Amino acid sequence: MRIYRTIIPGLFLLYSFMITCTATGQLKETGKKKRPRGKASVIAVGINVPLGDFFHTHILGSGAEYSGCNHRLGNMITKPSSPFGFIYAGGIDYYYGKKEMNSVYTYHYPGFTLVHTYGGVIYNPCKNANISLTAGPAPGLYNGLLKFWWGVNLSGQYYFNEKFGIATGLIYMKKGGAEAIWSGTLRVVMAF
Image 1: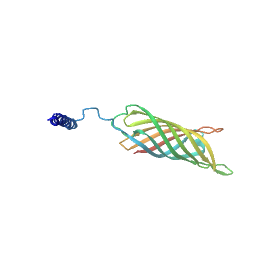
Image 2: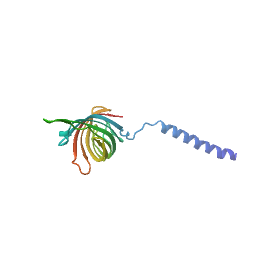
Image 3: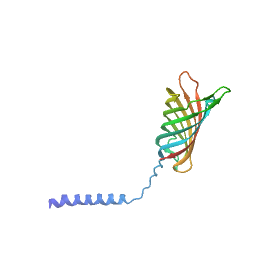
Image 4: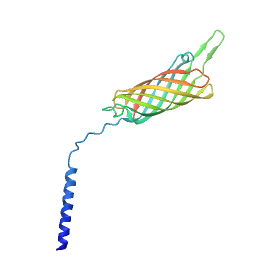
């Protein structure tokens, strides 16, 4: 008899616990849905247009860049809960030199290659666009000489759909003892 007095209430409690767990597992989720996450990475390719004095020596450029952040890229269904985040980028830009003709001779300016690794901040003002400001080191190769540069990139991206969009930006490059170089960019972006 003592066994029944301890086993039956224990089995009753166990059975009640199992029914409660099964019933709560069948309930629909009534809480808020998670905010949709955007893409974490972007590849961008396009053209660079030299500005200012740099335009007198170089005609046009091309560039490719990879950027990454915490799921703030691409066309999202809603805006992120926090509009600001961290972004990092790395890429390469090449500028084609112009030919300069004089009555005596023709001079061809050499090409200029810039490899950059930047870090900075990204701002999402709406669900399908962002603005980023990045800066960092950028080794540059000009006329066979490798020099250390600093660069800053202010860019904005607008996405037509979940993956593809267009980006425009302004690049500032500077090295010690030289004038600053400015360049505008227009690129096609793919988020993944």
